[in-house]
Every structure is written in C-alpha cells, then in structure tokens.
Figure (cartoon, rainbow, N blue to C red):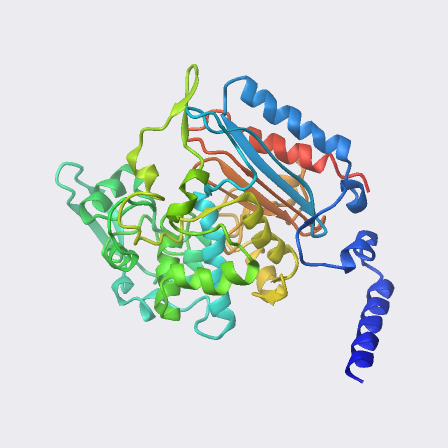
Length: 431
C-alpha cells in the first residue's frame, strides 16, 4: 500500500506541474528528475546557446593573453542546470599550476549574502523583528553618537548624540552609519586605535570582542538616513552569534553549508586543502604581480578565530552556486528548505529608497531597477554583489538564472571583465 501511495503522489505531482500555466517548458521534462540539484546539461535544453556561451572563453582568454589577470573561474546555471563551468589560466603563476574548477577563492564581501541569510533564518524563527533596536541584543550599541571632527594626530574626536537607534534592518541594508576604516580616513584612525579590523586578520582576535569595541565608535550619519557601506555585516554576524548561541562558523556549517552540500566553503583553509587556494595578484603598469599584503594570507596564517561575516569566507564557484540556487529556488535546495520564498522576496526589495542613487539595495543585496536594466543586459529584480578580491555573483529570478565569476586580484585594474561576463551570459539566452 505504501508503494501505491507513493506512486499516486508522484503522479499527482507530475499532473500538477504539467498543468501549471506559468511553468517554464524547460522545467517540465529533464528538470523533474532533480529540480534542485546543480547537474550539468546541454545549454540548449534550458534555452541557452552553447555556441554563444563559448564567447565567454574568448573574452577570458583575451584578458589572460593581455597579461591583465592570471586566471578566472566561471559558472552559469539556468533552471537548476549547469550550462557553463570552466576555469582558465593559472592558480599559481610562479609554480605554473593550472586553475581548476575545484580551486578555492577568498570571496570577501560575497560573505555578506551568507550572513544576511543566516540572520533572516533566525528572523523567520521569531527571535527578533527587523526594526528592533540593536542594543536590545548587544548593549554596547545603546545611544550611539554621530561623528563631528577627528584629530588625526591623537585620534580624539567630537560628536553629538544620535536621534535614532541602530536597528537590525539598518545592518542588513548598510544605513546604520557604521563604515569601513579602509574607506574613511577619520574612521581608520579611530578603528586602528581600538583594534577593529576591516574584516580579515592574521591574529587570534575574536569577533565578539571587536564588535563590542565598535559599539563605542561614533557613526558617520544618523541611522536610517544615508547609505554607507561598512562593517554592518560583520556586526550582523556577531548578532547571529548572540541570538543563536553558536559561533558564526558553527552556524554556517550546521545551518547552511552542510544542508546545501557546500563541502569546500569555510572561514579558514584545512591543512589538506592549502594547495587549492588561489594566489592573490595585484595589477601593475606592466600587468600584475604576486600580492605582498600579509593580511591577505589570513586563510592559512594566524589564530584562525576571527569569523568575519562581512569578508571572511572561502569557497569554490560551484559551492557558491549551490547557495544561489537555493535563493532562486525559493529557499530550497538539496532537499533542505532554508528560507521561505516570502523572506527572499523582502530581502530583494528596495529597502533604502533613493539613498543608493539610481540603484536599489535590499537586505544584503544590490538590486537592478528599471533604470539599471536599461543600462546593461539584465532583468529588473536581478540581485547581486561582489568581493574585494574581484569575485562577483548575480541571481536573476525572472530568467531562473545564476552566475558566478571568480578571480583573485587586488587592486584589479581590469575589473570590467565581470561586466563583460554578464553581457556574455545574457546574450546566450535564446528561448
């Protein structure tokens, strides 16, 4: 009887899918077998052209031949099927090791999307409301002050009391008034004195200690009245720790990485995988050279105890694509449901009004508007972000499309390759 019931249930499911009016024709045959799994398929089976996708090869190879980048990895999936996953060039120029699809990249600010999802998972479980004051959970942030002047010589400053309290929503949409030291000279003086890092460190620092210290720093503007990109998501990561009772590393591993099958995603490199970490290069007048910035070695050196929710994660293109597939699939992947589709809807709606110029920013993502879609190949509602070391991703719900491109360059003088990759991806849609 159990077997018959299962067969009947499957038959009803197939009938429902076949009769759904807005169901894509590409999701009614091959994709029924494994709607959530990122498996390879021929591009033509999901409405894309293999010949047109091969144009990506030419663009990436041109950048390598021009000595602008040592290598790049890219992955594209539509309707849950991988239609493009290739690597070009070298992982380590000095050794001559070729870049492989399984190699691991520092994804820096692409970590922010993971932390934002982690916070929203706890939001769904009733632990907080988006407009709750942050000090309710982290007392150090009660009664913030707004920065007026800083003495760069002795790091003293003047300030006045803020009218508003920082909320959880402000952290998610970068309107709290918290900045980055490396992008703001006055904040840098204050943050350096307090030992507050910009995201990755090669010391035995602990996230909670540094975020509590951040609570005593002045803000750049009134919470909610401007957009300023900063340590908001590192603080959000500590908020996740406070709410969940777990370290951010533990929460990510147990609640996101393991359910999604992200086996090569972590904060610091396991000793056995060190040879898969892609080297970082810096653009120069003659091309590029191996980066000499010691802090960039955080994945393999130091105390390995600072879990930066804004910049600390390492991953592969395929692993990150699994995370994106979960988002575009309404919160579900690999048989696990991490978020409600309604939660993803609010995360990908504009949360900042006109504070981000002509663009829009949600709860963890930049969002393409009607104006933005008129300037480049995209769809309205496409949401995206990138990382410090020249990595990018985007999710297009309308086209059921996800894409990731990774290099390891800072500074990256030829970062427009990511924009070209997006053009090459969209031009390959032929359905």
